Image (cartoon, rainbow, N blue to C red; front, side, top):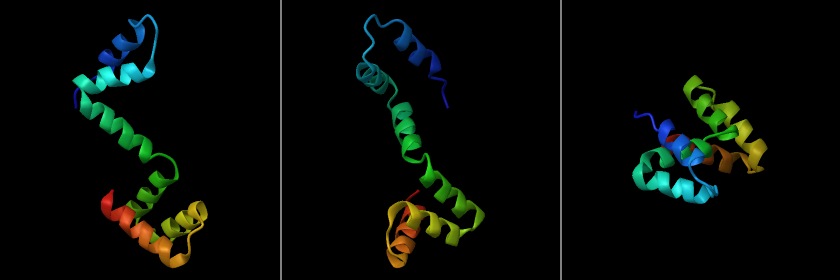
Length: 89
């Protein structure tokens, strides 16, 4: 993967009036993959990241318990949600 940190630093330090939305747009224009990777990383942070780690370690019941705790869904709906989340991530 290419190193885009220099581009980001250049945008942050050489803008007179920092508008972060404009910065993200400029980065996305020249490096769309880095923006998509960042968004994907944000979506997988927190408890959903933990759900994925349970998949890797084979702890399906722990994943279901956590999902239920966070969403308040019933057992059947939670099991289906975890399975769908695992299948798509």
